[in-house]
Length: 376
Image (tube, rainbow, N blue to C red; front, side):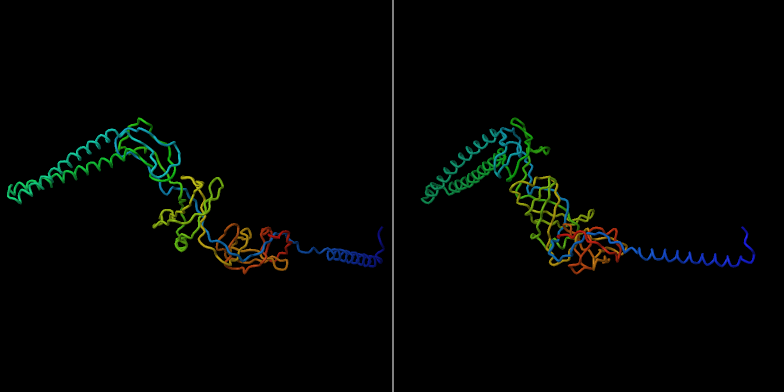
C-alpha cells in the first residue's frame, strides 16, 4: 500500500528511531556478555625442583680396556723335545712353578763330563802343588836346581787356570740345563699350551710361543683422557680414584691412578692413563672393555640443579625460575654435568625453585601450576 506523500516523513522518522533503538540494545547485550566472560590467563602445569648447594665429585669418564701388569710369552731357549707339559690350559700358576720340561739327557751327560774333567784337573793341581813344596825344600838345601822349582810353580799356575776354566764350563752347562725346566715368570693364569709332549722346539723359533702367562692381580685398566685434564690428573696423582664399569654391568671400585703417559697423542688429543686394581677376585679379565670413571677431586659447596632443567637458547643456557607462581627466565652458566646434576657457576645462588618439566610450554612471565616437586 502506498502512503500519502504527506505522511512519508513521519514514518521515516519512526523507522530511524526503531533502528537506533534496536542497535543500542544489541550493543548493550553484546557488550554485557563479553564483559561477563573474560577468561583469566591459562596456568601451565610444570614439575619443579630446588637448586641445592652440595659437594660433588669432579670426574672424567673415558672408555678403557683391561691389561695385565705382566704378560710374558714363554719361548724355548734351547733346541730340544718337549718331555712334559706340567699344567692344564687356563690354570692358575705361581711364579717359579714349572710349566714345561724338555728332554735334557744330552745336557745332563755334558754336565757329568764337565764334572769329571774338573775332578781330573783338580787332582793334577794338587799333585803340582805338592811338587812345589818338595822342590822348595830341595832347593833350600841345594839339592835341586832353581829352574826345576820355577817349572813346578809354572805348572801350578797353568793347572789352576785350567781348573777355573773347567769350573766355568761346568757352571755354563748348569745354566743351560736350567733352560730345560721352563718355569712360570709370574703369578697369574697361563693360556693354552701350543705344544704337547714329543714336540720339537727350537730357540730360534720366533713364531707362536709355548704359552702366555698373564698376571691377574694386580691388574691395569688403561684409558685415554682429553689433554685438558692433564693438570687435574697430575694434581690428584695416586689419590685419584678409579672405577670401571664392565659391559656386564658390574662396577669395580678401589682402583688408583698408577701411571700417566709422558706424551699426548697428537692424533687423538688424549693422554694414556693406567688405573691399578687389586683384582683378587679376578673380576677384571685381560682384554675386556670397560667404561672408566676417574674422580679427580671433590668440589665443595657448589650449586647443583637437575640437568633436565637446563635449556639452550640463542643467548646460551637458561632455566625457568618460579617466583610467586610465575615462571621467569634466568640465564645460567653450566660448568659440567655429573650423575644427572648440572653444576651451575653463574646465575643461581641456590634454593631457587627450578622448572624441570613443562618448559617447552613456558614463556617469560607465564603463570604455572606446580604438579610435582622433586624430593617432595
